[in-house]
Image (tube, rainbow, N blue to C red; front, side):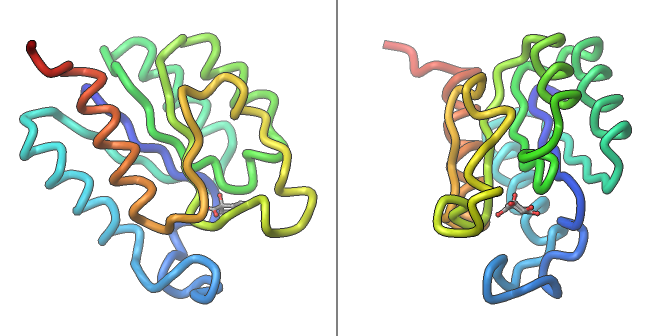
Length: 148
Ligand code: DQA
């Protein structure tokens, strides 16, 4: 697919997991809205979630071979820990946006640092599921710049 949406650990629990922080939407609901938004623009989109760092890295490496042009990633807790995920994204050299449902900067200090942000095109946090949709709007425009 042209666009890959990656979700890190525990995001499969969305809807049940700390709803006060992460909201009531399930991951399936978020992914299907993104798929619709992409289909509307005639762009193919793939969503992948894993609780395993290596599986996410394998998927990023695969993206480097399968023609993926843009990545939207919520690395969840791996944001704050994973040099390996950073290295994988740099290795494939695919532009990406980092998304967090919650405002990580208003939370514990260990969530303030990201191993990815300095290499992201942009970072969206605190806007809930809408953050993914805004990131996808950017990606679609990035892939299909408006003709003058
Ligand atoms: C998160 C924020 C991370 O700090 C946390 O570990 C998550 C989710 C978010 O979407 O707000 O699992 O990435």
